[in-house]
Length: 109
Image (cartoon, rainbow, N blue to C red; front, top):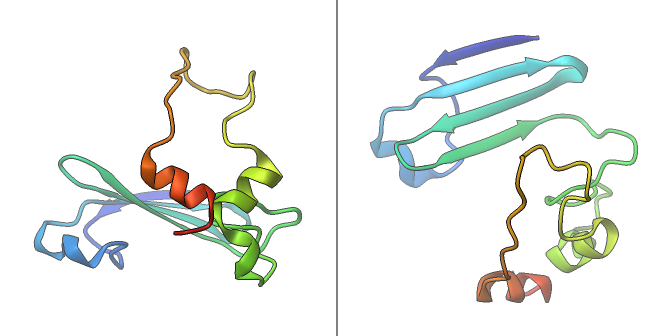
């Protein structure tokens, strides 16, 4: 793999064009590239990769059917939280759902 830090990269959010780009790019095995755009108060992130066996996640399952890529379908397949023992942080938060998240659970996003 290889990691670079520069100002090159296609923006995830076009509204950020007014700021200086600070991009961490990680070229990883299997043709996976991660781009992290570092801003003063948040991050944008892009993952570029080809389909992997049994792939699923918050952006869907890459089966070509956008109908089953909504939040409710993903939660049904994978659950809504990180399972115990897989959390990489030393304490667990117990947040509730925001109104927007509730709407997304109903596939209204």
